[in-house]
Image (tube, rainbow, N blue to C red; front, side):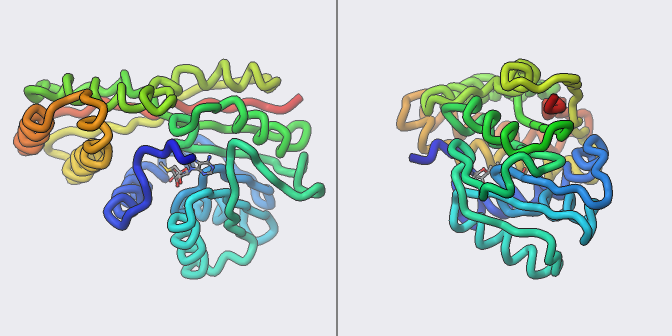
Length: 270
Ligand SMILES: C[S@@+](CC[C@H](N)C(=O)[O-])C[C@H]1O[C@@H](n2cnc3c(N)ncnc32)[C@H](O)[C@@H]1O
C-alpha cells in the first residue's frame, strides 16, 4: 500500500517539477559527483534530479532511478528520452524492498534519496537497501524534510493550525513528518561512518522573483493533503480555506519571508 501523501496526478507532477527547478542547483552543489560515477537514485519521481546527477557523471558513468509509481516512472522515462542520456535507466521498484541484480549490489559509488524517507513507514528498510547497493568506500546521501522547521513571517492567520494539521496527516499514515532531524542517526545505525550534515535553503522573500513559486508549492502540498486532513478531522473545511486565503494575501506582502530548509546528510560505507 502506498503511503505517499502527494500522489502523481498532473497538477502534482507540475508542482514537483517546479520544485525541482527551484532547488536542484543547490542540491547538486552539495553532492560533488565525479565523472564516471555509478549512481543509484531511490524514489526518483519525475527523474529531473536523477538526470542532473547523470549529467555530472557523464556518459562514462551510470545512473539508475528506482520509482514505484507508474505515472512518475513514465514521466521520468519521457524526460530521459528528451535528454538522450543512454547511461541512465529508470526502473520500477519498491525502495522499501529494493531489488537489484547480483552484479549491481555493492557496485554503486553513490546512493541518493530525496523526499522519500518522509513518505514511508520504514525508512530503515530504504537505508539498508541503499547501503547494500554501494561499494565499500561509496557514499549514501539522503535529503529530507523536518516539517517543524517551516516558519513564515509575519505569520498569516490560521497558518500554524493548518501546518500542524498537515504534519499530523503524516503520522496518521505512519510516516514521520520530522524525519529530517533523524538523517544522521539513520545513516549511523545502518553502519555508515564519516557522516556529515548540512541544509539546503528552501526559503524566499516577498520581493524575490521566485517567491510566488515557493508559495504556490506550499499551497500545492496543502491542497494535495486537504481531503486526508478533512477525513481525519485534523482541520475543518472553513479553517482550511480561510488559512489558504490568508496565505495567498500574505504572498503579496513585500515584507513576507518564508524560512525553510531541507535537511541533508551523507555517510561513507566502511
Ligand atoms: C516527493 S517525490 C520526490 C521525487 C524525487 N526524489 C525528487 O526529489 O524530485 C517522492 C517519490 O517517491 C516515490 N515513492 C514513494 N514511496 C516509494 C517506494 N516505497 N518505493 C519507490 N518509490 C517510492 C513517489 O512515487 C514519488 O515519486
